[in-house]
Image 1: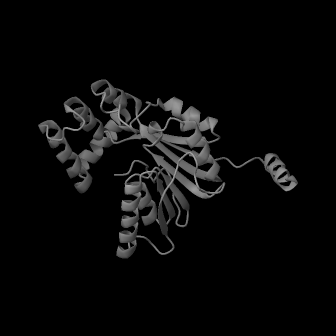
Image 2 (image 1 turned 90 degrees about the vertical axis):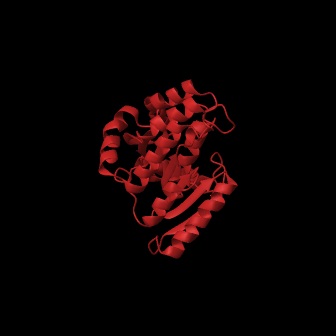
Image 3 (image 1 turned 90 degrees about the horizontal axis):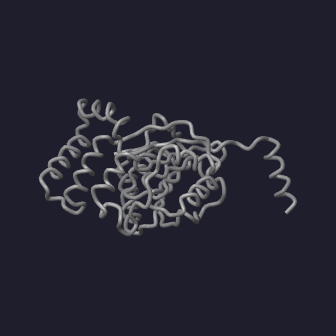
Amino acid sequence: MLTVDFTRFPLAAGDRVLDLGCGAGRHAFECYRRGAQVVALDQNAEEIREVAKWFAAMKEAGEAPAGATATAMEGDALNLPFPDESFDVVIISEVMEHIPDDKGVLAEMVRVLKPGGRIAVTVPRYGPEKVCWALSDAYHEVEGGHIRIYKADELLARMRESGLKPYGTHHAHALHAPYWWLKCAFGVDNDKALPVRAYHKLLVWDIMKKPLATRLAEQLLNPVVGKSFVAYATKPHLPKAAAGADAAAVAAK
């Protein structure tokens, strides 16, 4: 289940991609299938081991084209172990709502992104997320849980402040919002409640079968109750004068 829409976020074979806070690796796997040179980074060692196993299995099964590469590694989003301007593409999906220093994370992503590079940021959408917080303290008051809810204009403003130039937004996963409302209403750790189990079966069926009816329903509902807000941006090239000044400063050191 992808949150980033690759029809709005073009990816070319050979692009060097950082999936920051990759989690289980869903976006990293898709980039690998598309021929990218992928680095999947997360602070969770167990998840990184699983992502590495899946990368190896994909290579063995021939799921990635020739030239594609994939690496899974532990790392700190606030201190990325990469030189400046290392990546053509950065993806950070459902991560920034967990991190106190979100401005620091944005600064690190901009640092490692090449001028002209592209970035995709996804976070829980304000309205559906507010419902979850209202229904359940346990949903967000946990170690490593959500510490903030972004309004769309707030996130876009922070991206602009970091030096990025947003070019598009949309909402995703409308069918998943009611599932989380049910989880919060019946207990976030209570998977045995009948409404939760029934809705989960619907979501699994939708993901596996991709029926036209639910695809159309989600498209219609995404602008209203889409669970995720997705923003795309580029890192502008420096103006020639500024670029020349930077080069002169480096040469003078």
